[in-house]
Image (cartoon, rainbow, N blue to C red):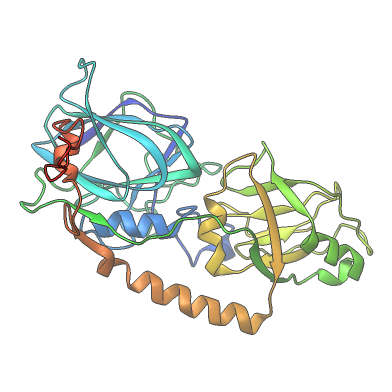
Length: 349
């Protein structure tokens, strides 16, 4: 039998994503890719994959996966979640593992990822990657078009995701240090290409007010709920190109931030564009979160982009062996061998 991950339960929305398929927007094909490319890159780095290797993007509630290979090394980066590893699909108790690390699983073992907290998405990478044929150079899933990924859709129970490797490499597992996925208080944005469709008062209001991520948000766009913006010159324009992070304002006056699966062109005025350095954090925002924006200049955006790319390049330098840096061994914690700590030097004991 070919090595695979067998899906016992798919979670709320689990898809295959990489860094996207740029270069085809002239054909109306979205770039797609990970909502949070920083966490995707970090998960790949933990298992020794290339930064753009395909991985699983887990939204809100995670899947349950069984290892149908001699063994497989997985990593987990993104939102916090209860991650448990069971000896088999019938076991009632398992061992907990934390995010920001890799772990080697053996044939028949099962990993269950619970509800996410502190963010909307979590990435699960597998050493060697998924053995999935790229579409237009990418394995990213574009759900609305049924394109790419695993049969162009989210995972379903019974799916078997083929793996490149039958066996994980013989090395120690590792963890990622110092990666800050904290959500900012404000997301930085430059003026949009149709900011002249809004009065100065409305533009100031957009940057002064807070919004809530609406329930209709998805991988295509983040619907914001808050103060209604009024157009000064109507809400229709001749359709033009959509950049990642574009903030459209349709006739409802409620802004929409366009994300990974955004359409390639749009006919609503764009009041702002979230800068590229802040887009990964924006992709982590769960429904119901409060969000606000801060205006920056294009020169500031360029400088922040350069700093962001420098941080991305440094991701492999943050990886250390499990147990390095002192403290209790994560392996001992995983095996539940430690239930308390006693200070042997304490004279009162």
